Image 1 (cartoon, rainbow over the protein chains, first blue to last red):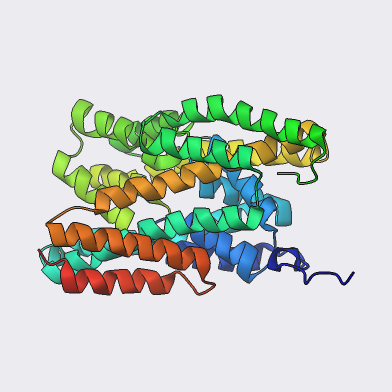
Image 2 (cartoon, rainbow over the protein chains, first blue to last red):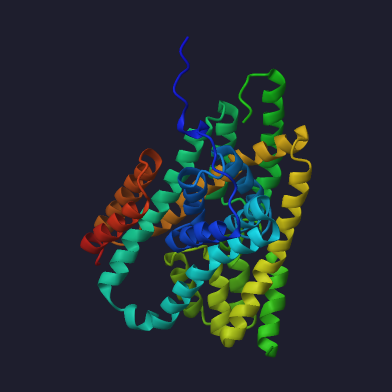
Length: 197
Length: 180
């Protein structure tokens, strides 16, 4: 039987980057990162530069999510360390924050001049809606590429509902649904159904 | 360092290690301390700073830099950022070291894989909550907001093009229909 064409996610990875390329990749992701730098970091590392698989990235982000602090900031530290040690962590973190900080402080200093222009407010309003949609689309895209079994989709949707509708505090969600999800992964592994996630 | 900058540093240092879910989850605590308890910022300045930090590119955690700058200038900015990001940097580093050391342990693999659905579920929730917050204004504006959000989600989900196009398109549509 002919082998089916390899899906996008199975192409070979590129060699691990040093601190310089890490800084550039995270700087670009930070600067473009309207409405959530995570979307852009994922795009840069998984789809554009092919330094990590979708699953690798999702796992690092999952760890970054349960640790205190910004999930993408924690991911930058861990990804930087994996590829280039402490210099890698500093390069990724510096790249992620430096340029957005400059842009943000310029906005803060200039804002009084712009605040009353209705065109600016309308443009930013539309952009905010698109950014929210981008974050949703990114979550769907990751799910589609990871192809999780139904019980993990249910746990993911339960997390969404708990956070978005029931407003359950994040640590509670992680402490309750995290262990359930881990148990589901172990159960699926024992059944030997093939898929690891 | 000025006494106020030092106070900022200590406050954000303490907040840092309980801020599971990142800066957005910690915003209510920041408001309580900075506006209600210490009167370092007015309510209006706090809200405007938060809106700017959300609208600007980059991680929303940079809001703590805006607070620091408002309260104690450039010293305050540095004190707040280092206080908030320092401990989480060290913790993430330590966890990365541990998880890499036991990377092939089956329990660690289950832990890492198990956190993925929760993380993605929370990402979806963030998009839904910010999308709902942006769906405001007149009836036309709310309808436009929902359409932009849904179309943008579909675009990012199904196409390989850069999300910058959907952001620009959203801004332009906003410019045309959202000048209420």
